[in-house]
Length: 338
Image (cartoon, rainbow, N blue to C red):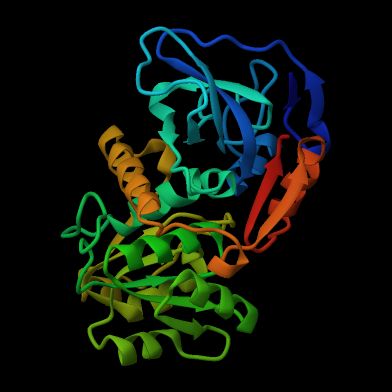
């Protein structure tokens, strides 16, 4: 079978297309014929060596994917050959990611994909949707698992509304009943955020974000899902509701986070950092269950018409796919594995 591997960390040129033996599933494992592999920032960062431990063996990149069950190992009775599935955390603490024709994964990381949903949608869930779920449930008085009505009466502000995690956060929050506000840098991204379902879109380059938030919700935002907290912390504090939570899931800078203490104390602000890999097992189980329910309800969709444009590459061009994500391509980067 064909697989993309890297034997050392570094630039995308370390990724090589190789022939490898077809792996056999062991007890409690499932072998999946991968149709689409999703690329996230965490994938190129791990390959580049900015995160993770040194390589002990050749590694296949990419955490997320979707495809069809090929065969199952002993003790697996929840899936069978031909079942359509999506995958999460495939490469976490293993050497096997989804940038290959077949991958063997523990059955716990395999989730049914409804017949009406595309492999593109399945490969776009994983890291973005599970991260978004944890961010939306980080409030001290919030639900542990999202469901329709779980966020009724809540106001959610999602910064950077055209990204993959923010797209999932908008869709999940709307599905759960929240009033959803989002910030963007221009008209094109505003159109994407609106297509995702955001109720209010704020251009942070032209508008006063905290003032607009309080114009819409005088008490402020109960949850802020923040992609750039170092730049946004002042606005976050000014826009947060009493007892609100700022959930931080991505920081692409080594600059320290500096914030005024007293203004943050006054609303009893909670700052919650989120890394989906290391949340508790229960939090991950709640996220997978909620994302599956939202998917079944048709609440999680991808494609430009749903606010998440798709950029595609073939398996042989996985390096270019990584470069596209590193360069900040808007939307979702996917790899087709025919």
